[in-house]
Image (cartoon, rainbow, N blue to C red; front, side, top):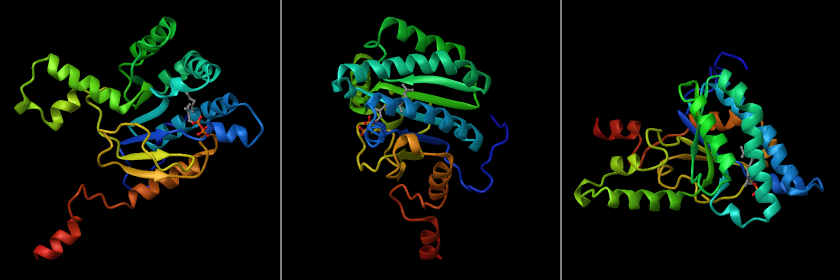
Length: 248
Ligand code: FPP
């Protein structure tokens, strides 16, 4: 991997990019392949996207690999996705570590096989001091589940209602300490949030592309970043130019 950030022509870079890697199944179907072949191609693409993220100089990347709803898929597909997570850790951990990537997990680990849980925890431990890229893997993750758990823990901790603020809720989420995603990229053209980072995405910018995830390449990633750089983020207010003009 190149050590030089290649963001020079992109302009304002997002600090945190999140991705819904959708369309693996349709990618496979369109080639007459089984769905799991789409997930394998998607995994290959994930390697390229992580590399590009490091090269662009982005600090946080969150990827949606398995949702709390994905348990409802056919058992062989669920098994395949579990295997992919294990395989990614086995094969990629060394390179990710060498590149300064810190792995984190968001979601519920407890439903995974104990050996897989241990692998995930070991990978987190090994990479915990890396700081070139923080890579959050959302696996068995659901946004509502995250919020429900946060509420349960806030109540258990006896927090008084008057002390419940945005900042306090943030402290109870899996993403504690992680800035909200600036840009969320969704492949395969679906226009929905799919229970992904529903609290954290309050003011995220979206880039939705019809491209299936296995075909989402560095050039399109760059275009998404360029689109983001051209957005006027108002956070519910008016743009600073307009404000200055109206108060002059
Ligand atoms: C959605 O496409 C994709 C997923 C549910 C899995 C995403 C997984 C990867 C990209 C592989 C990397 C995984 C790990 C664990 C690191 P879909 O299957 O819903 O596609 P479809 O909408 O076309 O059916």
